[in-house]
Image (cartoon, chains in turn brown, yellow):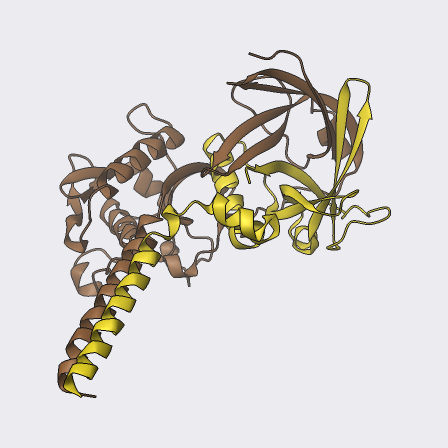
Length: 267
Length: 145
């Protein structure tokens, strides 16, 4: 091919790759959730479907889940601007270490948090920084950049498959890694009321739930939570609960088999 | 000859840039409009995992996620045999894997309208659908199409 032709073609290919990468990254959303790991309740921060930070301990009067919310909000704010590899850093704090993005503290690694992970504060902070970089599609500094403490053994995926926040390439979507302890095969059934509070009014109905007898005895109602998916999907989630509360406590192993609904009040 | 080659190069570059812009704008496109043309089955096959992760994440934030395998499948109306929405099913991982659709049977009882949701391992809705063992419904998804 004519040499002069190669230049515009290569430039075009480069632009294509850059824009496609930007499109992929623009889809990465930050979320957080509560999860069960090693028998303990923890809070996870995710970018897309990738777990990047796992918080095991309370700090500063915040529960792990509240800390995860704060971290997720900081990440969202930081991701509003373009992030470069060198802007994601680990630095010392008065007590422990922190992961900083563009000089702003994103997450603090306290002594107690590091202890819960069986790591030093610096090693854990570096692990989280690397997870963030991977999730953001940025280059992770090589071993030479992590001069001092190497990552703790239990956070190396090869050593412990259940180690938290492993490199993204080895992670599976959350829906594919359910804890296997819950029995969903029970078929005892009963009808319970559905309660939902939405902007469209108060509606009430009944749900037929099914599950193991012992779990079914605990179920008193089904909480309906409405969600919007993008601009074209309305989701009605049904949560079997033991009491009516704004913070539903799910009874595991119980699912919905049928729904009977009647509108009581229209606003 | 030179002019012709330059022309080809320009067309190539413009084509690549157009493709790049389409890729960049992919998520800005109204998926609802696409679904109107391609249908709910397509929507679920393309975005089922994304919807599943969205529900799991939203429930996880409220500490109400189900501790079981989940999956989003189409809902088929028993009478019409058409896709009328989608459902997130939950249960034992091996059983959830086998579920292909949720069959919906509707009935009226006085002022109450009842919808019976039956996760099944077949792709069609006919006769008396057999409920997949160890699987139930945890969410129903309605599409505005």
